[in-house]
Amino acid sequence: MNGSEHMKLWMFISKCQFWIILCTVLISLLLVAKAFFNLIKRKRSNYFVFLISIIAANVITLLIILFDIFNFSFKGTLVCKLELFFSNSAACFINWIWLCLFSQRFFILFYPMKRSSYGFFGFMRSGKKLILATACFALLTQSWSLIFIEEVTMLTDDDQLIGVCERDVHIMSDFGYRILAIGEAFITYAFPFLLTIIMDIAVLYQSANSSFVVMSAENIRTEHGALLQVNETVKIQSSQSIKQSNRRRHQAMRRCLMMATIQVSLNAPYYTLQLCDEIFSLRTSTHVYLYLDAFLYFIYLTQFSMIYFYTNLLVSPRGKSCRQPPKMPVSCTSSLRSEYTMV
Image 1 (cartoon, helix red, strand yellow):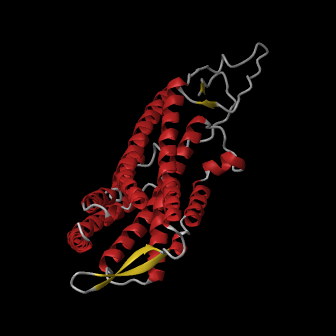
Image 2 (cartoon, helix red, strand yellow):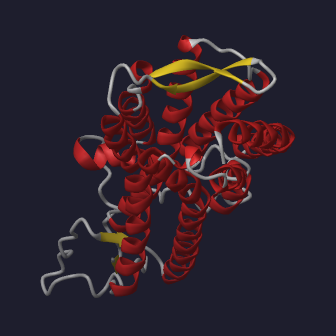
């Protein structure tokens, strides 16, 4: 396929994509808005700050997509830089914040008595600190687009000029851009997705191999009537509470693993194709790339509406199942049959 035919096909697919993308983005915005209003009613959930930040990043990305499809002709180099910077930063932030959410869940489940607000455990238990650190990391790692992107003017077959955001070939060689693309793909997508799945598998493994030792108040005393020393992996629960906690824990594990799998399935195909294009220049060598790019981009867009599904999975109707357990006293009396659960 020569350059003229390739340009015609690209313009045709772009025109078809316009309405598909527009409808998908508008539907996604409605579902994101609904997820936001549902989540506002459940502020007591541990997941609240994470999901709100993900919703905010989703809205930013969707608005950038809308701006992009309605401003197809000329944007200017500055707009190209800012558009790619904020869209990439939002994508990077979303992927890493999912990892933060699952990591915090891991530490709360298996280190329930680590309640200090200082040090590593204090940092991991603070949703606001994790969100702030993730936002700074995303902005820093995606700042390359402020340097290496420019607007390139192209001439269509009907002698119309259009502006396209492309890499600045005067700053770096093709090999350098390939290395940059590979590094960006690993930092933004591969690492957070892989670590998220590993974290969920670790939760499943720990849960399957942990043993629960239940002791009544009479059995935890020494021969001299003193209470046994309680270490940091012990918490106090009743038998009924243990059963309920185990059921909720296993449900949360299955839900989080399912969400991580869905996120990977919706993101990986499109960005794998983009990475292959950066390395092998597929868009100029075969017309199959244009069809595949349009199809996988539609799959990628469906991830934004999934936040409504995720909020319903993660947060109970009254926000009760996701709250942190209240602090309980260690001391027991013979009349109150408390129990210790070893995780």
